[in-house]
Length: 98
View 1 (cartoon, rainbow, N blue to C red):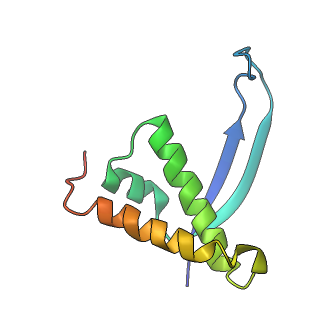
View 2: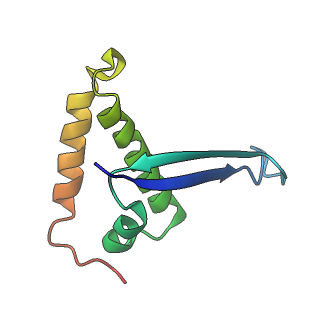
C-alpha cells in the first residue's frame, strides 16, 4: 500500500523555565497510511494541543501497524484498538469545522 510521506520537525523554542532556546531541532521522515493534514482539516483540529494529539496518535498508531509482530506491543495493541474505536465513535454525527 502506498503511503503518505511526511517530514516532521520538532524545534525546542523554550526550556522548562520559559527561557528561549535556539537551534535545537529534531527532524525525521516518516510515512502514514492516512493523509494527516486532510484528517486534521476534516475533523476541525486547529489548536496546538489538538494537533499535537492527532499527529502523535497517528504516528504512534502507524508504528503499531507496521510493527504488529513486535512482542513489546502485544498487550497494549487491543487497548489501542478499543481506544481508536471509541475515539472515532465519539466524532460520528459531528459537523467538521471549516
